[in-house]
Length: 444
Image (cartoon, rainbow, N blue to C red):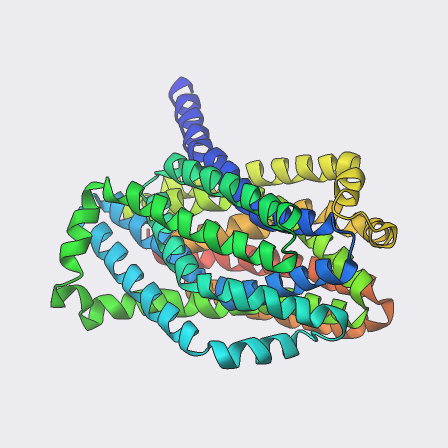
């Protein structure tokens, strides 16, 4: 009994050793969006705040679909670490960085077409359309920086260097907030200042990450492997693209759900769009905090699969779900107590504040509603069950679209209802498939 208790304590420590720094890192990441929306909100111009919100959603839709560069790199690196294979870790870094650079070049080539088409899809109309365009035309140039940053962060997390990632995120965000205040409130650059601050911050973050990665032993090996033909053989690239293809399509559906929210919110006018932008920041803040458990699941479950340790995998799944639900409940309680003054501080316009508080209960409940799906996402990515992850996302998106259509008469409340049920459907599908996937991965 004493040994079992000690093993359990070690398991919980392992979870929190990754989850806590990952939470702090993600909070620092969330400050990018929070700082932008808060600073522009101090101008008291709803059209400017709506423009930043819509422009940020455009950039999210453009880049977050490539988040597989981060999650796929975490999974492959963690599994290689579980096998004690440094060469495989180096190869994962080389291949993912090459993919990021290629995608970044393609995005820049498509820039003249992507901006007008994307803003038109998001219903950028009227007073906030020009503001959104200004924001996007500046931030778009940071796309390749964001992609390489995603790879480097994923590789470091896969090697359990989460504290180093935290230090970089904190430094980058301190710089970002300072630049936001200087450019917007100091120089009076408005929306252009917000975009320029974010662009420069991505560059500072990349420089810092390169410095951290360079100290890791496999990094030098990765540079050498990048110039070897064997690194790019069809079998290795096939495994990489299989995982990344599924994650890409899955993330496209997730991003599509969020973009549909922004698009439908734009139909309601700048007040609702600005309010939804504030509520989305509350949602994404809670999601990024709870994503700490997803990061733990990706790394630890990946190691368990790499080491073929079924018992540890099972114990990890139970512990991660319990910790996730407990912390999701905690954040929901914090939002219920302090969410109103926090949300109200994002604008000096009384109408925007009043509209935000009307729909605040949806943001309060989402941490508890969504946390189970976040944890399952981490488990599935760590185990590289990416095809099953995609299947459950397709089912959840279909549920979301159906509810969105059926609840159209409810207006913005219907929009948030559909978004909430989207997370419930994701978690339900993942829970149903997990036993079969576990048996296939760990045959008796």
